[in-house]
Structure formats: structure tokens, C-alpha cells
Amino acid sequence: MATSEFARLPGFRDFPPEDFALRSHIQESWRRVSRRYGFLEYDGPPLEPLGLYVEKSGEEIVAQLYHFTDKGDREVAMRPEMTPSLARILGERSRGLSKPIRWFAMPQLFRYERQQRGRLREHYQWNVDLVGEAGVSADSEIVAIAIDGLRALGLTSEDFAARVSDRRLLVALLRVIGVEEARLPAAFVVIDKIERMPPEKAVKTLRTEVGLDEEQVSTLMGLLDSTSLDALAEGFGGDRGVAPELDRLREYFASLEAMGLADFVQLDLRIVRGLAYYTGIVFELFDRRGELRAICGGGRYDRLLELVGGEPLPAVGFGMGDVVLGELLHDRGLVPAYSRDLDYFIVPVTPALKNESLRIAQALRERGHSVAYALKEQAVAKQMKAATREGARTVLVVGPEEIERGCVVARDMASGEEREVPLSDFG
Ligand code: HAM
Image (cartoon, rainbow, N blue to C red; front, side, top):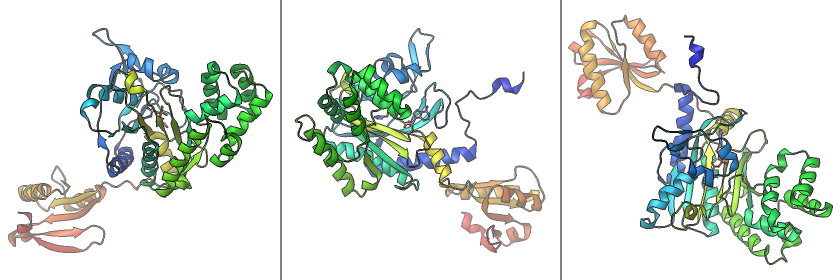
């Protein structure tokens, strides 16, 4: 059978060591930043009951599910996101946990996406969620973690920004404009897609699907372009529904300013988020040049835990994928050079010195060093070449004369310097 019949599925990745190195670089950084903020790591199963997503995730994700009937006739799905699993896990145990709950995970997720840059059919996603705190400080804390996750990888406010909105503010504004209650969901759907539509189509859709007249459309378009809370307050702050929403966002931005992160956040009412469960502040992180898809998305979802059958707890969190982030790091030259990183390569000069070499190798490994050697008899020159290929920092040459004198020769591969090391150093 031709090997092409076993080709990798579209949208899936192999991770040979040089690619795996980038994946670990990203994930180690995510883990470090999570711990800096006091978050604990958890995980769940990669396969879940189909119903968990059908009812909770919203249409877009449901259309992309990898699902099947298992041998026990259960309808199951590969997890396309982590949030419903988190809600289920906490539903079973949150009563015994002190609040707020600070948890993070780095699951591999599966979505049958249309192939496009930055979107694959599997990805790793850093999920950070704060559960049990309804106040706006939890919202600013969460976006700060997402921002720090990117800063820890070397990205700056020139590379990316968080665009922030609040679904409650948007609802209040839409009511002032005169959008009927029944049309609010339709308005959300249009606003969510508005950036990807030609302006004439946006106007037409707002008129036909949201029932707005020309003046209402132009007020709404103005709102969506507005980037300052003060401008919104001037136009709409007198409304009893709008004012408290503006105050909450003011506190949010003030906290981020106090944390030194003001340059990374901007108000943008076009951010709605496609997922069904968000109830409050929502945000997405984008590259400043606008070349890539969203790097990260999240927000407040105060009703999901209860919907999944748990304690009614407010929650806020985000998911950051490794695919767009990897592209951005490549574009900005922030992918660390791949190195094989071997501490020692051991070179026995004659086959008779094999066991002595193995003893030294093992003693070094016991102390936590990485050690390799040729696995068959080879001339010294060949072994030295192999040592270079393996990226060894030091080569230990085990020669008969030196062993007689109770030492080996250590060669520093970068400088070429050699010195004798007593065997007693290896225990
Ligand atoms: P999401 O917006 O669907 O949110 O995904 C979050 C991030 O995951 C995206 O911004 C993107 O970086 C990455 N991502 C999503 N789909 C793909 C894909 N097909 N290929 C590559 N990367 C992808 C959620 O999943 C929410 N559950 C996040 C959340 C956690 N909200 C609260 N807590």
C-alpha cells in the first residue's frame, strides 16, 4: 500500500522535535504565568457526551464537532472546547472548594474547521478560569493573565491588543437605540460578523434582520466605531440602563492601568463572541497589524455552571490557542533557536573502555545531566562528529592512559579547551 494512503489527516499536525520544542516553549510559558497568578492546573477527558456541547456551546462549535456513537451506543464527541467540561467538573465538586476557584488547563481540542490560516482541526488551548467571583476585579485579573501570557513570550503592546466589550452594555445601548427585545439576539449575530461584511451588506442586514431604520443604523454604526467610554457617556450616559455598565467598565480599565497594562486594552463594541454562554465583559486578543485570526478569546459566563447542573456560580475565563500564537512568534522572530541541548557525550577510545564509559555516564545521569554516546564501536573521529551532531556541550574522552591515572579528558565543545577530570568526580 502506498504511504500516501496513510498521510496525516488535513488540519492535524505532527510534532517532530524541532516543532515540539516550540509547543513546549509556549506551554511552559503558559504554565509559569498561570502559577504567577495563583492558578492550579487541572484536566478532563478528551471525549465527552455529545449533549454537553449541543446544549451549551452554540451553533458554530456544534457544526464543527467530531462526534460518533461508541460501542456502548453512547453519543460522544471529542472536546472542541474546555469550558463545558470545566462546568461539569465543578458541578460535581465546587461545593467543597473555597472560592474563588482559580484553575487552568492546556487541553488539545478538536474542531472540524474549514481550512484557513490560523485555524486547524486540532489545537492546544490554554484555558484560565476564575469561578465564584462576580465582581469586575475578576474580569480585569483574567485579561491581565492573557496579556502576560503573551508578554512572557516576548510580545509587546506593539504586537497585540485586547479588544474589550460588555454584552450587558451592548444590550443597554441597543435598547436605547430602540432595538426590540426579540431582535436582540439577531443584532448580536450581525455585530459579531460585521467586520467581515462589506459595509452595504452590514447596513442591509441591520435593516432587514434587526428591523432598524436608516437613522438607527447610523447611530449603531457610530457606536461600534467608538473607542472611548467618555464619548459613550456623553451620548448615552444619561440613560439609567447604560450608566452602571459604563461605571463597571471604567473600573475595569482603571485596574488594568494600575497594573501597567493600559496600552494592551481598548474598548471595542464589535467584540461579541460567538459562543452562547457569555453574559458580561467579553474580549479577544488580536495582532496589531490585523493579519491574523484571534489569538485568544474569553469573557464572563455567569450562568453556565448552573445550566450544567451545578452550584450557580459566576465565572470568567479565556482560551488561547497555540496556532495563531505560533504564527505570530514566527513573524516577529520570537521562536527560540532549536537546540538539542546535551550536557555530555562520552567517547571511549577503545572498545575495552565501554563499561568504564557506561559507569561514568550513569553517574552523571544520576546527578541529572543529559548524557549520550555511540551505541556501537566507532573510531574516535566518528564519535566526535556524532557528539557535534548531538549538540553536546562537553565531550568526555575515556582513554586507557588517563584511566590508568584515574581521570578522563573533558573537552569543551564551544571553546575547544581540554582539561583532565578525576574519576572520583563521578562517584
Ligand atoms: P474560542 O474563541 O472558541 O473560545 O477559542 C479560543 C481561542 O482558541 C481562539 O482565539 C483561537 O486562538 C483558538 N482556536 C479556536 N479554534 C481554533 C482552531 N480551529 N484552530 C486553531 N486555534 C483555534 C473558547 O473555546 C472558549 N471556551 C474560551 C473560554 C474559556 N471562555 C471562557 N473560558
